[in-house]
Image (cartoon, rainbow, N blue to C red; front, side, top):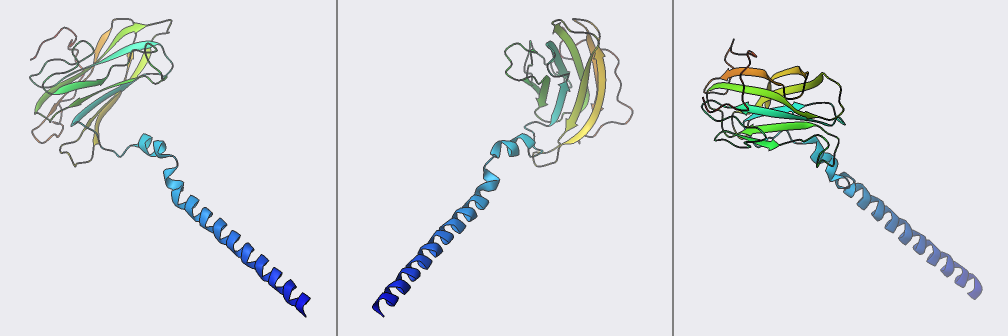
Length: 203
């Protein structure tokens, strides 16, 4: 009988050991499942939250991997033009000056400017082909203008167009438009009559 009791005790010990291992494994799996959403936070950052640091947002984008330096120029009402040689005015700031493949660790080609506030009046958005290395023309450029009237408001796309740069040093006007004192687009105010910005002054 003593031998039988010893056998039963060993079996009970094995059951307890297996239970402990299974509980530990279940706990580990639960921890992994809880941490899964936080394993790749970069992906969440890349998606963005729809919030921008400025009110009027102007962006340009041209084909990635193209060694071309395309410049964005913007001008707010009664302010100086803002671009690569003058990165800030009273209203706009150039946030990113993309030089093509020069000093760029990515293949993405884009530039953007943000405004502080939404003053009423006429806005001008130009693109300029500063430099192209062994590229074929024309170079397509997408231009997008968005507006956020208040800090907690949603950013809404206002205007978008595609233009083509056909030679080095060409500057063209993508948009001229007017906003009212509530940040709304004035009906009938949008056109693309050329206005040079690189050498212009406030007006």
